[in-house]
Amino acid sequence: MNRENSSVFKAVIIGGGASGLALSIMLAERFGGESVALIEKLDRVGKKLLQTGNGQCNLSNISTDLSHFHGKNANFHNFIINSYSDKIEQFFNRLGIPFACDGDKLYPLSKQASSVVDALRFKLNSLGVNVKLNSTVSHIKKVGKLFEISTLEGIRTIGENVIVCVGGKSQKHLGTDGGSYSLLTELGHELTPLYPSIVQLKTDTAKIKGLKGLKQKVKAVAVVNGREVSSTLGDLLFTDYGVSGNACFYLSSYLTGSSSSSIKVDFCPELERSELISLIKTKQQNCPYLTGEYLLSGIMNNKIASSVLRNSGISSLSSLIGSFDAEKVADCVKGYVIGITGTMGFDASQVTKGGIDTIDFNASTLESKLVPNLYACGEVLDVDGDCGGFNLKWAFCSAFAVSENLK
Ligand SMILES: Cc1cc2nc3c(=O)[nH]c(=O)nc-3n(C[C@H](O)[C@H](O)[C@H](O)COP(=O)(O)OP(=O)(O)OC[C@H]3O[C@@H](n4cnc5c(N)ncnc54)[C@H](O)[C@@H]3O)c2cc1C
Image (cartoon, rainbow, N blue to C red; front, top):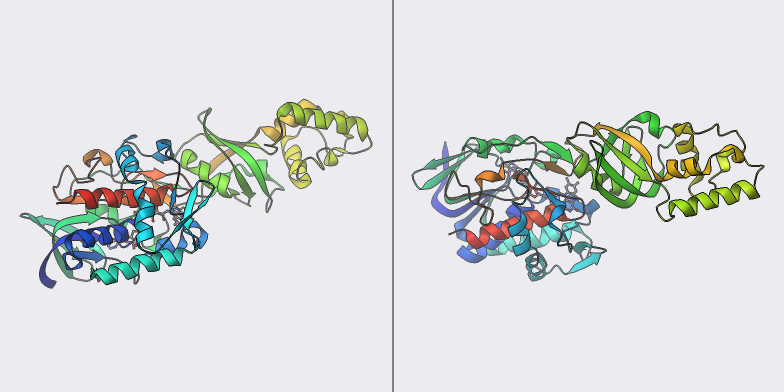
C-alpha cells in the first residue's frame, strides 16, 4: 500500500459534496489549507450540487420551522439548525454568491448551481486544501490517537480528525450508492432503515387512468394509516406509473416507507366546497343540455375533471348534467383519494430518509460518541429534510457545527 505522504493532516474530510466542500473551506480558514485533506470518489467535486434545484441550486429556506426535518431521533437537528441557519447566506456572500428569495426558498442570485460549485472550488484551491479526486475511501482505522484512511486505489492518508461527508444512497451516478455507510458501521455505528425520499410516487393506476401528462395546481394531503400528516399546495403531474411534480416531491418525505398511505387531492383549492357546489348547481340550472363530460368545464381543467369523475364512477359521463349529485361531485374533486403503492426508488430520489443513527453522535458538535475525533456531516446521518432547500440547509449547518467544534 502506498502512503500518500508523511503528513499528518489536522482534518481529513471524506466526500466532496455539499457538506464536505463547505467544511473543507471552513476548516482550511481555521487551521490553514495544508492541514486539511479532502478525498472525493468522483473525478470532480460537487457533482450532485450541480444538479440541485433543477440546476438552479435551492441552497436553503428561510423557514425556521424545525418540523421540516425528519429522523428517528426526532429533535437531533434542532440545536444545529437553530444555531447555524443564519450563517449560510454570510458564508456564500463571502464567496461572491449573493442570495435571492423565491417564496421561502433561497437560491444564488444567478440561479445557477454551477456558480455555487465554482465559488466553492475556487475558494478551496485558493486556500491550498489537499484535494484527492478519483479516490474511494474503503476503510477508516483508528491507530492510537490518529486515523488511517485507506482508499480502494491503495492510498493511505493519516489524520488527527476524520469527518465523514459521504451522503446517502440516492442517485448512485452522483457518487452516492449507499456503500459508504460501512465506513461508520465498521466503527460500531448503527444504520437505520433507508427509504428514497423527495421522489416520484407510484400509485393505484385505476385512479389515475386518463390523467397521464396532465399537470394541475392542487392542494394535496399525505395520509398515513388513516391520519393526515402533511399537506401542500403545488403542482401534481400525472404519469403512467403515478405522480410527480413539486406537490408529490414535498409529500413523499411523509409517505415513503409507510405500508398504508394515500394522497387526498383537492383539484379546486381556490374554491370552498360550498362555492364549488353552488357553481355546479348554477351550471345544472343554466345548461341542462350538457352531458357530464362538460359539467366542470370552465370551472377547472376539463380533461382532469372528466377523468376524475370517470375514475370515481360517480355517474356516466354521457348522462345529462342534471343527473349528477352536486355535493358528491364537489367531494370527489376536492377529496380525490389515490392510494400509494411505492416510489420510483433510490436512483430517482433526491434524498435518502434514514442513515447512520444519530443517537451515537453529539447533537451540537457531531462528534461520534463511540470514536473520539470522528465526525459525520450531512445526509449520511439519519436526518432528512423536506423539499425546498432543507437538505442543503442541513448539509451546510452540519458543516458549521463541525468546523466550530473540532479541536
Ligand atoms: C437531483 C437532485 C436535486 C436536489 N436538489 C436539492 C435542492 O435544490 N435543495 C436541497 O436542499 N437539496 C437538494 N438535493 C439534496 C441535496 O443535494 C443533498 O441532500 C446534499 O447534497 C447532501 O450533501 P452531503 O454533503 O451530505 O452529500 P453529497 O452532496 O451527496 O456528497 C457526498 C459526496 O461524497 C462522495 N463519496 C461517497 N462515498 C465516498 C467514499 N467512500 N470516498 C470518497 N468520496 C465518497 C460522493 O461522490 C459525493 O461527492 C437534491 C438532490 C438531488 C439528487
